[in-house]
Length: 242
Image (cartoon, rainbow, N blue to C red; front, side, top):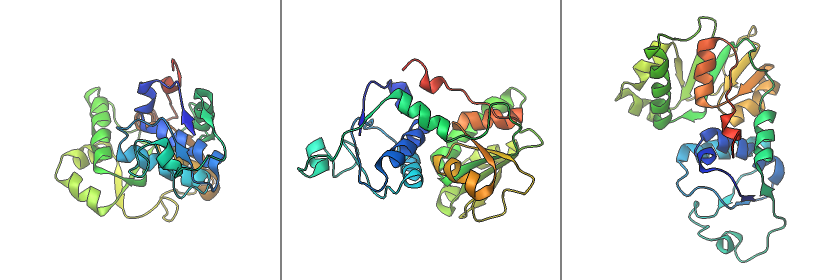
């Protein structure tokens, strides 16, 4: 799978990796794909987003990323000297479609719940979220009273976040933090909730079928913006100008 002619700004967004993972899972199904063209500086959270979405949309249990994963320093090394079964060139339109496929809710739909942390929120994600929340609170904005905002994390990330001010920022905004569980196996989503929003490709893929809700997929910034507005708001600048 080759990535070509994509602007660097696009590949710096974690939402890009979720969309790519969704496309990858749909295209590869149960094969072991090789990705050529990923930024060598990709973060662990971005790879987490890619892996979770790919395993959800398909049955991808493993992939090689040239110049990123340690066993794939070159394209030849990634294939172990073998020839690829097929080559897929990923275009901007492919990623736009994957992005669109992850949402069943529409712009400006009334929002009931925001879910972050599927897979579990990391310390770095707590930091990024705190920065977004501060921007809103400095403008006198806070969580809309009709919106529930849930962050799912794990003991280790939570313990690190406790040593910072990030938890206080999140809770001051109105966020609820829960540990070591999953939105699909707990009663986080009440029967009266119709629309949820997430920055997780995995959550967006499963939520309509598992929870019986409409879902809006967006960036973390989109999720915060929508939580303040009380309705779905997404900026698609990621896909413009590339």
